[in-house]
Image (tube, rainbow, N blue to C red; front, side):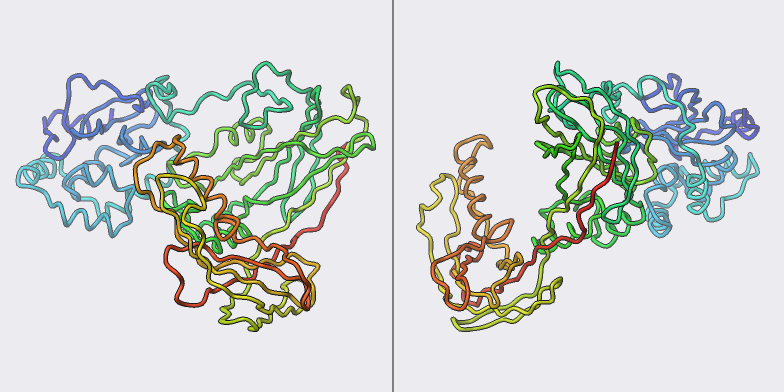
Length: 512
């Protein structure tokens, strides 16, 4: 037992006023570590303070209401230091919450909540009866103790791993079973698991190191797992640049243009089309899925369980980021063949890249731009520019009022492009307005989904479509529509030229 703690008990000092009251029952919570000896309770949210067998005199705070995995944190290396922290801060509340704050926030809390007369009396007893002085720079001391501690050494009881007791407890990984239709998320049911064909093939493509750990030979086809490794520094830089946090990590918080830029820079995203050649026969995939493992997620959040299970199963380095793809390739034969030769081809899907903006005022206006890859200079000539109003009942779904005002523009490009070039309205437009409550599964809601799909074609989430009209005046005539708005536009629409191109060359690799 800590000597200062023994002396403290003999002096019979009551710490209830400073947030560490004694209790006779000391019933543990699901997150109370195995071997914990509880000596004080804060009186709110089940917060308690303890020693843990095997950690000497280190004092820990246990906070059952914290987000996982922040239930247990060390506060002081000894009970004497714990009391010195109380002398400096006046209450356990500051000590228990220090992990969430920077030093300025910690100091602000101390200024806002100075010790009460009752607390000052207890602090005086601690100082005089035990001969202790206040801790200098308490926040820095706590931060150093917590940052240098190995949390993996704390052991918990079975309650911690029981989802009924701890909703944040992760389910035990299921038996590893790869089926043709299962993907990572599908129900495996009674489908036969494929026979594993270990490969262990490594290569570099698209600026990433890849590992092909195994293929699986199923009755209906071949299933291939592809693991792309991502440097955690690249992930952190991406998250910092776009200020991605749990509360704003949603596409709804960013414009379409920003989403396109983010997709280009996201190190955990790469769209590609794989094909395999088995015994000299080309196989195209019929389905695919992927999971991402991000080692840089904020503390308290977790990755997809399926991603963690895959990382653990294949023994991948959990300090790195991983994107794990699974593709199924149907056999072209009636029976599963013996695989004697296997190769893989990876083809990147083109990226959509936002380009320059322009604001035409009338037919005949021109806009000159250069393709960022080919370097070809194009001239866009506006042929028609007309404000239009769609019929009020165009979408035919009750419960909503829909925007109906748009601007139609037809144009030509010179020279005629062989590359993919799109024109989009830079503005998001207006969303339909709900005029009466509706059940999410009601016909009205289904109608809303339908109209949003239509808006996606003429000016919604994916930008307006470029459609071909008749005639060829100095090039093929194209037409686009602006995003829908409730009020007719008084100013000219600002359009954006978007490009679609591939950043990485196709590559083939022999796997077997």
